[in-house]
Length: 138
Ligand SMILES: [Zn+2]
Ligand SMILES: [Zn+2]
Image (cartoon, rainbow, N blue to C red; front, side, top):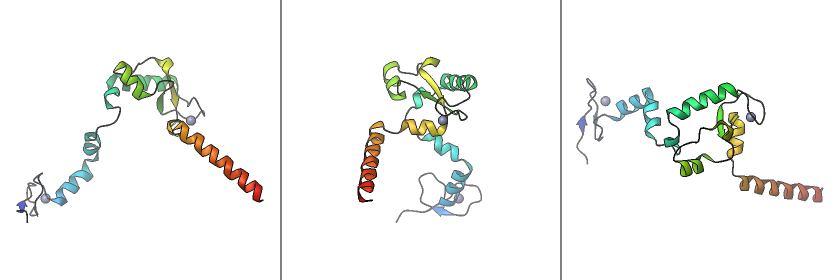
């Protein structure tokens, strides 16, 4: 059994064996009060591309293109129109901030666009099959 230590929080009587020096209760309380600290510490897939320049570009782009290019809803996302973000990062080391390579999308359309095209094609194929089977039986 591990040796229990006093919590580092001033006045907290709890004993614990956490490396952090804080008891479970205090750790949980800290996490509740500072959720962003834990969010930020998680490395994001495209993090090195999303720097200050990109943030500014994105803001300006949405100011000029306030509606979704696909459905006309309020645009919230700047989408890499022809070159996927990953490929662009591989090729250029950072995002090419040329507005002609981007389009404004709403969250819904961005999510739909992000879906794997092969998967969508496969699903559509199966839907057709089901449709034909239903018709055949019916
Ligand atoms: Zn504590
Ligand atoms: Zn849309």
